[in-house]
Length: 499
Image (cartoon, rainbow, N blue to C red; front, side):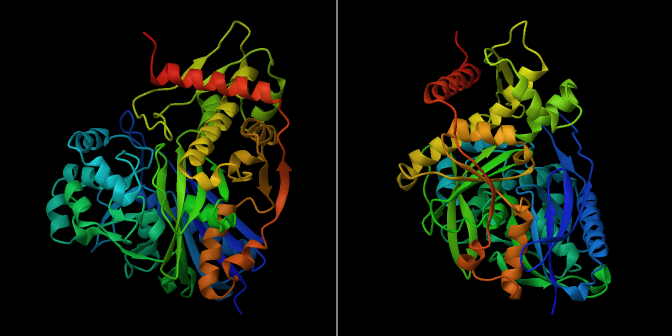
């Protein structure tokens, strides 16, 4: 009987591999960072070989740490940074260009042109998304138009496209499987989330040949086997989901109305809306939360581009901290009479504003403003943006309005007690931090283990979820309202400058 499920968590700044036991406890973890490439302003790239090599190395390292062999692993699950785009040669398996990362803004002119031509309503109606450089479709078009000969090769069927999950699946199976899951497909601007299939009209508008696209499957099911040479014997690959959807599964948000928010480089909040897609009026995204046995469950999603990246800016850009963990104590020591607001629009603003052109700003600076006040402003900016997302969710989905919201949180920032308490205060809602904080990887492991018979059905899996600490709101209502009003004024000044 195999003992473990191996989760591959391929993220924006590092690749990780985690071995989970059937009781969801962790047997071993391995992690490796890889370089970021910024060839021009607003451009962000990864070397696909770095993604593959760090993934393979961490899988082997995790197995070694646990003293495990391939025969001890029931299945592999993959979760990945979404929207990041890889185009590779089918014959060699080598990418024809660096991966264009989800943060990259180079395709803003193409998105603007499609909007000007009146196509955004079609894209939104079929994909649940807006026309923005964030998503994969315009990135594919850029590669085809800017790599010499790429478009002709794509038309001849020589090239394959994939989000990172699909690229890793191709490599793991030795080029035998070109597939993805419904959650990753739903982030491409090419997939009809209502019909569950690639859309010919959208492919034509973006100039993407159908032959490039992977087969779309359930999140849980047999995708293939790893090449025996990689781990000494084949291992079944049985689960795939984009990172935010995997976190939704890992947080056991299987009931409509449940909300999770992940705090990593960015912040991503999803509310489960059940079997019916909800069209947003507040610029949230309608997306697929997961697909099991051919049945799609939908979600409303709010995407914040800068969360943990604001803390990285304090460390790497300003040099006022040497360790991210120091920000909580600094924030606690900040002068309460100063109201400093950071609007961290370093790469534009995500939901619910979707303004790629604005840039970050600080408001309320005085001669007394120092590192502590800046640290508090950076951490509070994440809380304010989350409040914006929850307000938008309530406006879009009446079922969420009036019901008690309990936010399940995960990601690196949730280790900060100060930040989680301030989040609960500004939301006026409880914030639950789980015992198993690696919820993204756990979601991938669960999807794989479900198909392999290691984990139970969703309802029984939800019973395994445990809260490590609940943060209850403690801020007075007048102070909360005043702080939120100050935030809204700061954003308004940035988005709609006065005079």
